[in-house]
Image (cartoon, rainbow, N blue to C red; front, top):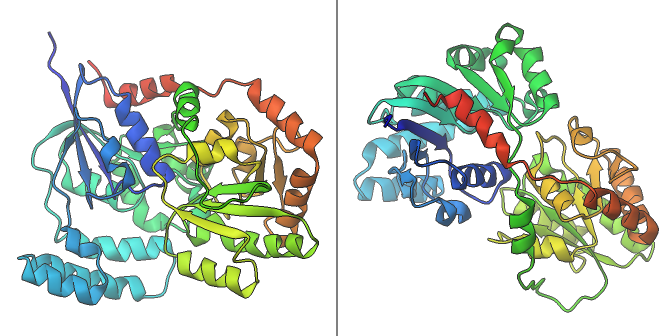
Length: 398
């Protein structure tokens, strides 16, 4: 009997984002008769931590739990609890993060510091899979001894603000770099044409049967509202464009259209979005539901699914809304048409408050249109669990 392959997966954490959901779904389907799997996180935290299969060996985090606290509390707690080097790293990273520049520049500056403080992998692996851009890939390339090195970038490289010059030597050292849609693959080819043979599309894995079963659970929106419900599932960040949708909601409410918008997710823009809703006078019409371990009953119970993002790779939340046959409204981010055919199974509108308002009004007031989109979605089978075979092929199973 051949020996099991030793595989290491790397990610930041397991908070309730699309990447994290994709990772735990992949791990839940893994063939543990062929592979021994370790999971290395920068922080062992998040709503999906409890969904890691028991066969996966969760390693100690690269940074202590105190590292995530605000800078003053972090420094005191790290020193007090015997992590003086982590305290130094936290201080230097804070300064680096405040320097002007895009996301790629900040990630590069942070890694130049962090690489001196994080320990290398404790053993050699047959394959390492860095499941996210930035630090997971940098760590896999420089701190892990493995026969095969595989990276994932889940978004549109052109839209994410990453640093092409900094990333190039890391891409060079990967054996494969995966992304989640053909549009995202084209963006990688635009930026790194010399490495195009390394690029692979691995779609987010979906199980329609699992989603529908999860969606049958009771749902509590926290109110007694009985009108139309719009739902978004998103990290509360600038990328997701929720700030663009709030004026759209306000303008429709001024026109007398009755509905409520529910948002599932947490993130750095939560306070700013809540203040924006208050300033627009729609705080009663926009409900922040926070993290939800099972968002599918909310998705089942809504009338319209809204994703007003500035950019996406291939949104898992949109895929899940399609599985549950919900009328979908997307802004025209670069990969929107990879998922929705506008006018056939959803709507794609301009990335403006006016465009969002027009699309929402159309979907909320036209029941026949919603039913047509529902029927088109219902006719498709979105289950694609065989995508995991692509990962096995890249890892190697000889």
